[in-house]
Length: 374
Image 1 (cartoon, helix red, strand yellow):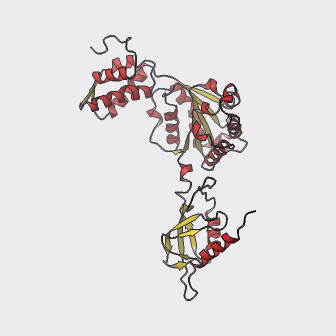
Image 2 (image 1 turned 180 degrees about the horizontal axis):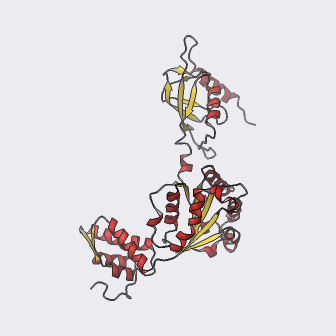
Image 3 (image 1 turned 135 degrees about the horizontal axis):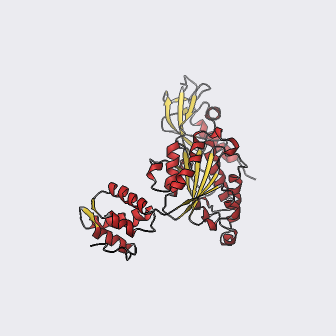
């Protein structure tokens, strides 16, 4: 059984040293705090803090720190629910005063759960920035209209959508554009980040993700490379935690905990690798295809416009040689490699010789393009 006698004694001693003598004390009008965390760390300690009700926190803080001295940049330590958790005083009026029954206590919550906020993605990408994918753009119009007016759809609301297709075809870019167009939070998650170190970690992470999205709805959860965790049962022997993750996903996707105004979009390059139960929860599967000649021409044009060097390139030939390449491959394997090659040689213009280097470096076959570098 845990012995708290010594700890309680230390707490009392700590508090006594911060109490102002009774003669003419000055009461604090307002104290502003921010979470500072623990003064030490160990494996089982959770440093994240979430304030769900500011008014309740103010009463909680005032009750335990009543009569304590507060000065700028000093710390107040919680001694109730989360012992030894520190709050830094970032403002106090007046200085060298004590907390009284009338002291207003405020907390800055912008930095609380900073790690949890990391998944919320903001970007300037628009739907029009995605070249091609006409079918995908048409199908997500339903999601767009739903996020603008969720109440209108009722029980007919879209919930779970699967994006599938070749890597680099714009799945992530499209969902970023969608979130930006309708101005909602986008929780952008790599599936592998949901895998925990211990039993139950993955299920907890998945639950927390959906709970957070629900609190800030309408919102979008985008889980990339979903096949990395929701494996088909024939592959589940490769990882012991698969059934736990699959069950947690199914619970959230089924809406047992009502995640109203939350759209779940998952992406995969290999839909056949998905667990059948998970795949059956997607009401719509949207395919992303490789760009055709016209779309590749536009991709080259758009990217060349943003390059930091001038270009002397034959786009018609580049379109031919980039057959069966995704937009990302065109940018990364051809244009970026060619640009870096030109910069490394102190050139002011990217020309077809730099493209030749990029194609060879990327091992792209050019036999089908006659007179490529004539």
